[in-house]
Image (cartoon, rainbow, N blue to C red; front, side):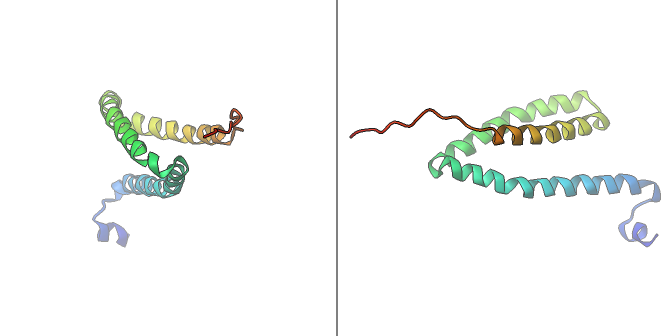
Length: 113
């Protein structure tokens, strides 16, 4: 095939290159799908809460990165990547179900001043 020669791909590498392309494509697609939801959540929390939201995100990512490093050192990539995809694929419906649950708030009281 001409595409193999133009990209410098050996015939036995076609499957791996295709899977790598699909992983990257779906990663970027999910980012652009979730980004408006993230922005809307930030707006709903209020502009005054954005600094706290960014700080909390930074702290959580700072804590999760070493955990991911430890897990990735223990499991082979062939096992780890499907486990991570399965975790996040299962998290999306759970998050949507929790978000669609009716919220019961205590009655608001008027504050006199």
